[in-house]
Amino acid sequence: MLDSTNGYFNSEPEDHNSSISVYSGKNKECICSSEVGHVDAAPVENPSPPQVDTTIAINRPRRTRMLPSDDNMYAQLRIYYQNVRGLRTKIDELFVAATDVDYDVIVLTETWLNDQINSIQQLGPSYTIYRNDRDPSSTGKTRGGGVLIAVSNRLSSKRNTINNNGIEQLWVNIHIQDATICVGVVYLPPSSADDANVIQAHVDTALDITNSLEPNAVHLLFGDYKPGLIWKFTYSGCASPDPSESTFSRSSIALLDGMSILNMSQMCTVTNTRNRTLDLLFVNEEASKNCYIFEADEPLVDIDSHHPPLAVTQVCPQRISFDEILEDRSFNFSKADIPGLNNSLQNIDWLNLLNHAIDVDVAVDRFTLTLTDLFRVHVPAPSPRNKPPWSNRRLRQLKSWKAAALRHYTSRRNPFTKQEFIIASSNYKSYNRFLYSRHVSKTQSNLKRNPKSFWSFVNGKRKENGLPSSMFLADELESTPRDICDLFVKHFSSVFKKASACQLKLNAVFAMFLVMC
Image (cartoon, rainbow, N blue to C red; front, side, top):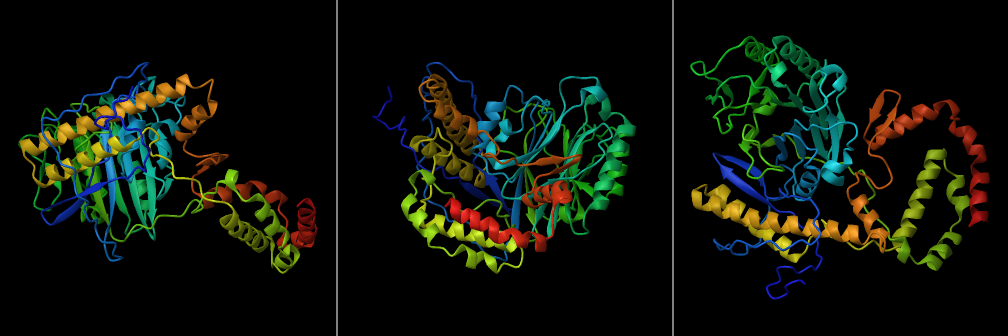
């Protein structure tokens, strides 16, 4: 039974609100995530409630004023990077964590994925996922390796077609108004990290990418390079190898020379438990002006001691404009006013509306716009759903406390504020893990009695609802709506007829439509 005394297991559904905090220091403002959840999503038969640690009291935070929405403000692209050391056993953990994060881009190395694992299982419907898994035919290995870049669906993105030269590397172009941000990632296994020829092949690919970019494009390249170098910050704001402590092998020299040719600087000095920096971030001159990197306060999955997670804020030269990919309103046709809609359809003079269209495209636009306007009048919008579906008031309260603790910690970094944040985060993660496990258990037990809930659970993990997010034609892969439409045009171009020929049949087609109505 649920304990209603303290409201800990209050399952009242509410809207899921995200929260962010602002870190200010050294004349820099960076948005720090307070969304990252870390869970163990394995379903249990009879889940027991976690105990909330109240060693340190955390008061309910007041509402904080967000940064003003000024057109002259710079947009901040928030990027998360981590070497995850395998996702095969952490798929549910990553999925639940992704429901809390608000990163624009997520970059992962050592994913250990293969073609039997669908991308839509990883981060849910909020991200478009690009992968380059390890190829057993070229490496002779069936596990390990692999890289992944996930871009928020609010941003327009496209995979950069390259020749990988047998290297696990990947580049994605993110389009922001008239500017481009290119995000790349590479994973070099220990057997290749010391091979100067592999490093040179990687640099050659990066050079091809650089040459394909616009002059003012921002280029960021993440990588698990293992160069054996000790990095220290310089007065220029970038990092350089310490000559007295670094080991300059042929591969590390090839890497430094190649990045020098590319005019890219290394920004990361975050060290692991052995005081080494294995994961690097190279940026071009345009990116280095406004690029800030920190160790992430919370990981998406368990941290490997050799690879601390990174949080990067790239300040863009202009405000981000999110593409409107989907219709701005959904319709709940199960509650539609069918008689009223039917009456409105019959009262429209379709022939007069469509007869004066100059071509088929204009006619279709008029037809679609007319139907949409009628839907807005006679069909209500669906009720907002819980995000995530297992969320409740108590979980969001714990999340709010965690966000307050994170703001406190980022503004006053000391052992007490760190412990305060750890406790708040642990409370949130434990309860989130419990709710998700209970949600999965209920879905499994109700499969026979309520199969609709099972399919709702499955669809909640899908990238799309019926329409694919990307499509192939021969060797071409497109992921944006316009490019997908162009693929259809190319495929059916042999049977297209000119608009003038189609216009002759337009009246007859819509006359048949009226008869059917």
